[in-house]
Image 1 (cartoon, rainbow, N blue to C red):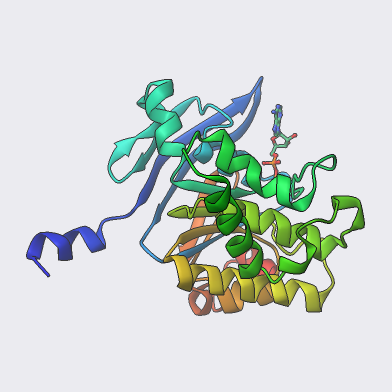
Image 2: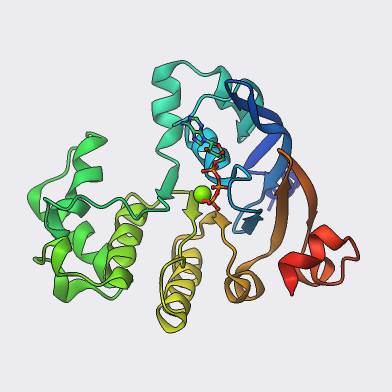
Length: 251
Ligand SMILES: Nc1ncnc2c1ncn2[C@@H]1O[C@H](COP(=O)(O)OP(=O)(O)OP(=O)(O)O)[C@@H](O)[C@H]1O
Ligand SMILES: [Mg+2]
């Protein structure tokens, strides 16, 4: 490995600086900073309404921030043309808080959707192979021809997960992947997230309140409070933190 490659390994894949977003007079993000490194799980915590989903939507370009920068491999996405942004977005997979699978489409069609949308010139056989691999990754191959109404909550999350990874994104953003699931199903989703990270060498930003998920999945944690990154650190350092606001997240 060359010296340059070694240095690049230490560069963040994603670097967020001074991110600000307001809706009307309501300030949601005022000075948010964070870095994401290769093969890292960065957990974002914060109270309900703190702006975690807004943050993640700014990162994938669904919401335009007012100011600040979001650099991917050093290139600022907030300054990109629409065309450049469309290319940059392909590096991301996004598991929506709501799961967001299409109820009128079968599991198979839900998974084919992102493959067709990005305009890859794939044969029917290649599409089927990708759909089957992604479903196999989440243990749902047998459900390929079911409709969403026939799925449990945990299965819907898995379909959402399969759709998120089907384009093998470099960065995966998970918005509350275990919320609304029972503890056992939640644990299954957590272990899937870990398996996907190992298989695809993905870096992830995970929004969660789930202590089990944070303990087992986080390399680093950032606590979003009053629009800013209030504290950052690994799980043991936040667990040992003396600030009362931080402590209440780790009871
Ligand atoms: N498109 C929008 N227009 C106006 N206000 C918005 C919009 N999206 C979010 N907000 C507001 O931004 C604030 C933060 O919302 P957000 O969804 O990011 O919270 P959150 O931290 O994800 O909360 P939760 O843990 O409940 O999911 C809320 O007050 C919300 O009403
Ligand atoms: Mg949210």
